[in-house]
Amino acid sequence: MAQVASEQLQKYLDPKVLAKVTRLDLQARLVVEGFISGLHRSPFHGYSVEFASHREYVPGDDIKHIDWKVQAKTDRFYIKQYEEETNLKATFLLDASESMRYPPADETARNGRMSKYDYAGAVAASLAFLLLQQQDAVGLAVFDDRLRTHLAPSASQGAIKSFVRAIDVNEPKAKTSLEAICHAVAEKIPRRGLVCLISDLFADLDSVVRGLQHFRHYEHEVMVLHVMDADELTFPFEGNTMFRGLEDTGKLTIRPRALRQGYLDAVDRFCRQAKRRCTAGRIDYKLVSTADYLDAALCAFLAARAAAARKASAKR
Image 1 (cartoon, rainbow, N blue to C red):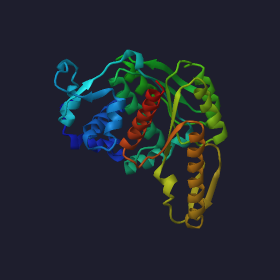
Image 2: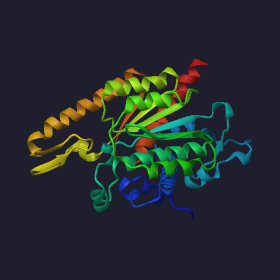
Image 3: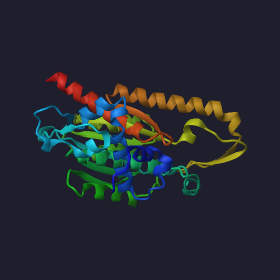
Image 4: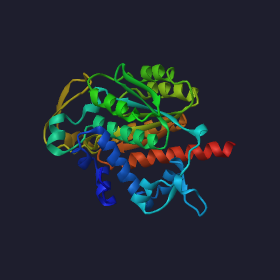
């Protein structure tokens, strides 16, 4: 791809703009390059550099280790640091249950929106692309009530193709069985690494936490990116509206205004409880709206990685 101005690249952090890009591998590349191009203006700059194993160039460094792609985006020189013994093995758990299909395809096409699954897939692919650039290994588990696809962590050049293909071929259509999936995947990756769940968490929180604790038992770092649609967080509906449950929960016609405040209170309690339960279980948690620029999710991920690195360094 020809060099694009940083301002142009950063527009792809907007989910409405990104939704117009049909190829997931290209989405991931545009998101990451747009994100990196803005690093020098970001309050998360320090987190990103620490995680990415870059440091600023100082006179005397071998110029062959300069990351020229970052220099082209930021006009600053950074040295790539390769430490084989600290390379990360990351596994992404991507929720493909039916509730992740919201909003429906006709609405996403009409309004240029991304469904929760499309947004979550773009986040997972972008983080995988970023990790692979740093010589780390990425794996993927796509699930609903069963494990649909499992890719063991790989740092090969073709890993991103397998990664995005697995996301593309799956379509949200069944219920969630998150606890069982966590137990199954945990037994497939016993070596310590990073596990990142990307889900709307529409499941019993007790069972979700029990499943995630299986990864903690194996001393994995665990992070949850809680993806909610903007409609779910703001309830903008007017007039009599029929709501249809996406996981066999039936239909209901209501007057949204009469229920809005009660609904918003319930959602707030749910999100606060999810965060509290994750924090108590030593699991990093970040709520992300599909209306958020994708750098919100990337920054949360990098900040969690930086905090984990600081803790590990303090123990040594």
